[in-house]
Amino acid sequence: MTTKLTYELMEFQSDRIEAVLASHRIPIRVHGGVVAPRWIRFHFSAAPSAKVSKIRGLSEEIALALGAADARIARDGDMLAIEIPRPDAQAVRLLPLLRQLLRGSMIPPISACIGLTDDGRPLLLRLPSPDVTHVLVAGATGSGKTELMRVIVLSLVAANRQAKVQLALIDPKARGFGRLASLPHLIAPPATNTGSAIALLNRLVAEMDRRDADNASLPRIVIVVDEVVDLLMTGGKPVEAALTRLAQRGREAGLHLILGAQKPASTVLGPHLKANLPVRLVGRVGSVEDARVASGIAGSDAEKLTGRGDFLAIAGGHTTHFQAACVPLADLSHFYAAARDRNAVVNAE
Image 1 (cartoon, rainbow, N blue to C red):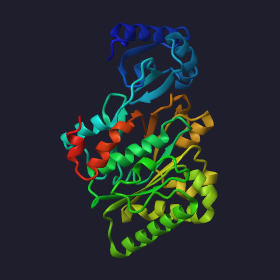
Image 2 (cartoon, rainbow, N blue to C red):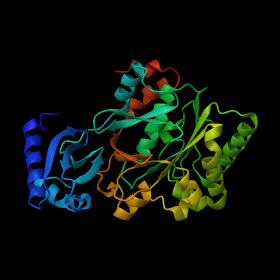
Image 3 (cartoon, rainbow, N blue to C red):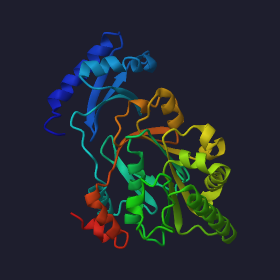
């Protein structure tokens, strides 16, 4: 906890939360809180008769009482939680976080560290897990969506040799992955237009078919597509068909999709593609409806996220609030070095 966020302030805010809900005849008890890099979470329990929907309806009043921009009501196991933004938000750099994990041999193969959870634990994305396989990263402009996809890529290359992981990057707007173009793990230069994207996707489908015939799954190939909705709109049926085949059959052949979209509506992605994206990483969106579409569930409150890396991870019916890691330009050289020698990150200062 920083000097600005003292225990006395937490106690004061806890009392204010209890007072607001008591004024609406909803008795609760706050059981403490957690300070994360970008927000503060207060855990509380309410009487069995209390309706969560009624508590959610008081989020604006709670935010006003706490002097916060907004408040988000979330489930946290058997308890509820109220989250408010920190006034002195802090970034989570991937380099020191990954250095700590690699020193302790705490990253399983083909896994990426994507940030810190509300209790300060590193959050890992384990692509070989049957519950993961393919991932949708959603969020409006300014949410940190593209930066999170870069973090996934750099975390994978820092912790895995090319014999284990290779990458295919598709960047239709030629803005998201330019810094990653020289990574040795790439099977081809990043595709930056519709024609090159279709050619790369067809190559990957052919590789999947070859692996099916040979019963092979290594090295894993992680296919990262920024602005997939734009690509689908310009590429039409060939893009949709290739992505759908990769989503439906890629796991057994060791191919994984990471798809980024601002508004991942089923009318654009297609029901078969969207149904095969079991993990959603959702940043700030513009409305309640956008939150439902992006997260795949109602009441995620993704519209109340603060942007700049404030994310929800939704998988297997569970929702985890986390602060996505970031890679400042000054840190990038360490990851390029780590692509050839993992000790470059372990020994980085």
